[in-house]
Image 1 (cartoon, helix red, strand yellow):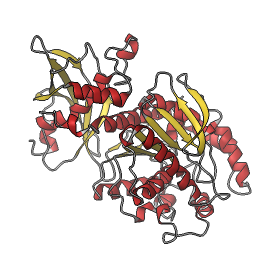
Image 2 (image 1 turned 120 degrees about the vertical axis):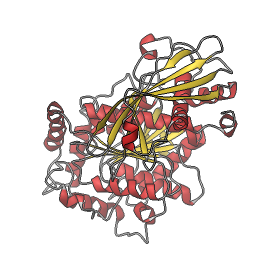
Image 3 (image 1 turned 45 degrees about the horizontal axis):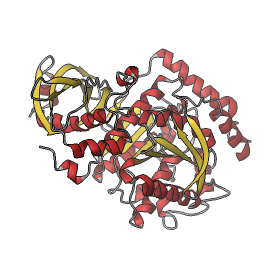
Image 4 (image 1 turned 180 degrees about the vertical axis):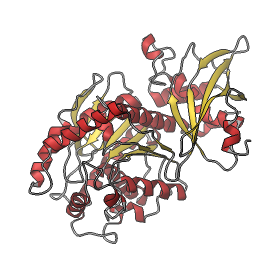
Length: 471
């Protein structure tokens, strides 16, 4: 136990200690094989096996990574500080399979400690060895970093470099050239413009795209080459509840499929004003229920951006109300979760956010609600409800967004209510920047964070039989 973050940071260059992990039983191996949809131990492609994407379809990599947070907790704690575990370098170098009845052992050392203004960042090297009673063998060397969380979040990213600013402006230009300004433009004009932006995004990673009906709702299955069949992600697209489409989001779904090693169904939920609340919520409910019924709650996750993030919360509220299971985890990117559209960031960042504004957001909310308020449509106002039952939640938002306070306030609310929430503001990023991961580095960084988060949550949800096998 360290008395403070400063005392902890003073250990640069020192070994922090070791901890024995669990004995790896056949039940645990079978559990992770089922979760990842593969029983491969050594991938036939050495590039894939040595890649920076931890896990892939490698059961043993998932297994090792799921143990690390618990083993770290056995080695050290810092008094009075909540340390946020963030995946830094996700290197997992697997040199051999994990034999049944062998034991994992973890050793931690501190590489660096830096004052970042909003907190102290501590970089750790974690070495996991496999003790097979003959010769301990290093099987993984991931590098993690910790930071004591600032007021509103777990991490605030460093300012984007100048060359990234040019790429961000490319995103802004794509929107501004395609989407007419709110003044004088019809909703149909804006819908066509948004689709024109989305049409410029490439579907990468040799992903298959298949139109389908799932849970009685139309949409598209998107699956990156090699992605698991046994894990399902559901994607609820953005567009203020009045625009956007499943087809337009297939490119983003391909990125998510690769990052999380899952097939993704992009939901073609009904849009307002033709179909006001609760039509979109009902569509999302049906698809969520179908996915959970197919693969189980712990092998299902849901991701949404902007209005899609708010739609996630609304649909989960309705599932919870009727006692239905909810997914293993949720990811909210630049979410619109407060339809009062009254947070201070709308005015504070009005001259900085080039993509969204209070007037347009209020108009879209009014079309969606169709005169309904919190009493008539409580699920549409999740900030006013008890959300203590939500699964682990990842919240990502850009610092240039008028929706910033939606995310900040939601993160604070979830923490108060005891939900596991990880929150990050990306410096200088604009609304829904991860959609542009094909050329924007911070978009790719967000995808890696999304992948790490979801895979960890799925891996941590062991059955009681597997959990009881730990030492």
